[in-house]
Every structure is written in C-alpha cells, then in structure tokens.
Length: 251
Image 1 (spheres, helix red, strand yellow):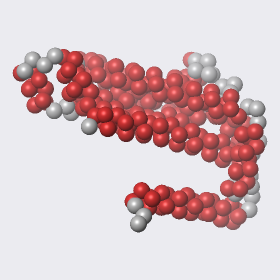
Image 2 (image 1 turned 180 degrees about the vertical axis):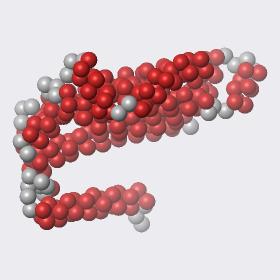
Image 3 (image 1 turned 45 degrees about the vertical axis):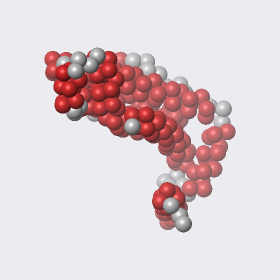
Image 4 (image 1 turned 30 degrees about the horizontal axis):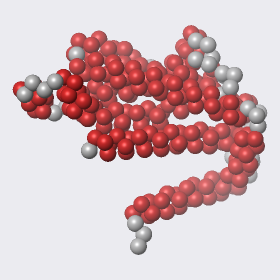
C-alpha cells in the first residue's frame, strides 16, 4: 500500500510534469525562441553555460554573497531582537529603524547601495538590510510570547538565569527564529540576484543574466533562472533538515 509520503512525491512529480508540458505547449504556440524557448532548448542552454569556465566562479560568488548576507542578518537579528525583546526602551529605540528598513522599496535600497558601496559589496549590504527585519521581528515575537506563568514559577523557585534562558527563552524563540530564517532564505536569493543585475559585480549570476538579456538570449536567461531555483531549493532543504533536527532536540 502506498503511504502518504509516496503519494505526495507522485503529486509533486505530476505537477512538475504538467508545468513543463504547459511551458512546452506555450513555446510551440508562440513559435519564437527569443520570446519563449522550449524546455528542451532551455536545458541545452543550461548544459552549455555549465560547461563554460565562468559558470562555477559566478555561482560560487553569488552563493557566497547570499550566505554572507543571510548569516550577518541572522546574527544581528538574534542579538538586537533579544535586546529589544527584553528591553522596551531598546524596542522603541530600534522600532523606527526597522520600520524604515521594512518600508523602503528594494530597488531604492539597491540604487543607494550602488552609490555608496563597491559593486561586490552591494548584494551583501542589500541582503542584510532586507533580511534583518524578518529575523529581528520573529525573535522579538518569540520573546514576547513566552509563557509568563513559567517565568513566574522559575523566579519563585530562584532558578538560575542561564537555565531560564536555555530552558524557557530559547525553546520559545526557536520556532519563531526558524520560521524567520526559512522566510529570509527564500527571499535572500531574489534580493541577491536583483542587486547583482543592477550593480554588475565581476563574477555573478545576476551579471550573466543581464548579459544574456542584452543578447536577447532568452534560453540563457531561463537557464540561469533554473540555476537560481536549484540553489534556493538546496539551501532551503538544508535549512529544513536543520529545522527538523532542532525541533527533535527541543522535544
């Protein structure tokens, strides 16, 4: 008997197949490769760019920028989020800054970063500014939603502060932190690629995307897009595995 996990995989595979068939049908209907190439043409273009000597340097540099921006955002979000969660003064002090970060359009941040920073730093700076509010907000929410009865009981029995943090605060923050990290990881690659397209670093997927656009090489644009989707899938899967391990440890 087929279990639910197998059923889900079959449904996902059928959905992907339907997507590819729809894509192929639209490409044939349009009949112009420079507007919409077929999946086969895109796959061939993907193989060609993977064989070029610039492929892996571009991928590694983009991945490095994305991870650096994500990790710095995580560190700042956790530290400042915990400070704001424990102190209302710090929370009100940081609120205008976080509100500005959340409200500023991504394109405005990218353009300003291009003016202020060297091109290789632009994607990292933009990622930090866009991802930090997500992590920060989730950490603050986790602290604010801790069970107050447990805190009162811990204080009543004079439990040591380090045990309160490790056994009450950390488990309460963890689900919010993981949710924020998953959301931030999904957004990170979109932000990084957008910043690379405009800032044009020497080696970057975004730069190669822009070159393909200038050459009207739509198949290459789609091929690079597939590469970004694969990168995003790999890192979100790794984050999901990490989340499962932490959840099991918490239980």
